[in-house]
Amino acid sequence: HTGIDGWDTSKWLWRVLALVRPSPLTWRLDSILGSADQSCDGVQESLSYLFCCRVVFPPRLPTIKKVVAAVPLFIFLHLLAGCSSSPSRSTAHSGVPPSTVDPPANISGCHESHFGLSPTVLQHSYDPVKITLAEGQRPLAGDTIVFSPKDRPILSMFRIKLSALNESKGYELRPVNPRGGGYVVKYLTGDGDEVCSTDLTFTQGDDEPTQAHITVNGDDRLRVNWLSASSDRGQVYYQTLGSTAWTRYDETSDPRTYSEQDMCYAPANGQGYRNPGFFHSVMLSNVAQGGTVQIKTGNGTSRTFTTSPRLLAGNPLRHSVFLVGDLGTTGARMIGEAWGFGTLEFPAPAPDHVLSHMRKNDKIRLSIIYGDVAYASGFSTVWDQFGGEIENSTGMTRQLVTSVGNHEFVSFNNPSGWYPPFGNYKSPDSGGECGVPFTHRYPVGEGVEPKYWYSFDYGAVHYVMMSTVHDYLDGSAQHQWLENDLSSVNRTRTPWVIVTGHRPMYSSCPFDEYDGGIADALKANVAPLLQKYNVDLYFTGHLHRYARTAPINGTVHVLAGSGRFLDSGCSPRTMAHLEKALDVVGYVELDVVGRNELRGSFWGYNASLGDMTVQDTFSIERPQ
Image: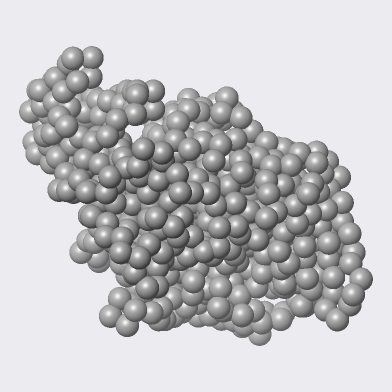
């Protein structure tokens, strides 16, 4: 890409690349560097592909591998800084004709002249708004409607392709309350010119409690976590079914927040940062079936939620558990962006098949997401929308627990990072977040200190949430904790033991050298503990596919990392213990039948039917 300090970078890069044989990397660089006229958005998107996809380098010349890997990263960070600081400019995307819509002299009044919003004031966060074109409006290819937070109008939070707007029916979007006064909604031509704009606001204002979820706390309690622009301590109100009285639970400590200085690398500590508001947390007693919860902060009040009670340890009641990894946010691609970083695009390139299906399943009482939760990649606005989506689907109707993945934690310059001589733990996967947004938004306990590995009991199962991005080798703090935890399980009370971790030990496709090195380390250091303490299931993600093994030394390994995205296919290798392999978006519903049986079902999206169907089943039985 000519133009970086007057330096023809492409020629320099090709001198380096000429030393290695052709690979997927050289092909992708050709598509990136072949045009000197790409917009900043296009360069950011293309270069980001290199860092989030698994590129296989030739096995020779290890020094050259490191040089080649470092060069595009240097260019990416240079361009990211340059694009965010350079004057705004309009560059037509290749193949998109410029719009013939003439911008008015005074940019305003979009609501009737070009498109309409209904309503223009939303009662609550994530309520639907319908976007319809004005009568007679004929947009050209590339024209979009963009939602930006009013306090950061330079950020494009949502981009609606006008080609998706049916003239009579329009398009429905559910935006989170972004704080900062709501949204400015703009009509942009294909070459980036703003034609007009209008506002979308929220009745509850900036104080509204949003992005709420309820989780387990201790042995028998629950904890409600939420976000608000208010720094006042909040309250949670609970009402039993059929009662008119409310029980009030007060927040007992000041809410927390974080700043861009708390992050460790770009874009999280720069272009991607936006004031996240304040994170609130209230502990409450277990609820009864059909109970109602409402949250208040400052002058804002949440909608009401009907939630299910927590199953206490030893309760054999039959129920289902939702398990998935690598879920992501509707409107995002794998790295949390559309054309430009941090922008969610609609219609969504990766639709919400999983959450749409599971929210209708009344048997599910517990939701577990084990790593790569939102794919925010350093952009606060993506975290916000993900929080709204989770609240609406599962966050407040049943308990939610999460654990960390590489896209929440792994980064350069991570002060608490782990950099062993194997794997790819020194990479920009989290967009410089280094676990900060994740541990504030989805804390364990009070969240005063980050807690990356923990365990809890739910019904007849003891769950262990380990971190595969922190040291798990024999002799480490986590390894010692894991052994202590597994050795102390009361199998009379909780006969089943399930461990989750983001990274897998086994896959239906060949590992690359990085994932393979991590898998070998897990098999050498963690697998012996699974065998020693008779762990029943090990659930993982990271690889965007589904695979299940027969018991390996007593433990069934389930890779379910296709919550929204799919890796490129492969010819499944012959593995002695492999029982099922699918390249399908989906999730696992684990039916805890009781103390003597578990049944698993993989719900996968069937493109031919346009619906989720059961595509794998398994069961584990324990002698009575």
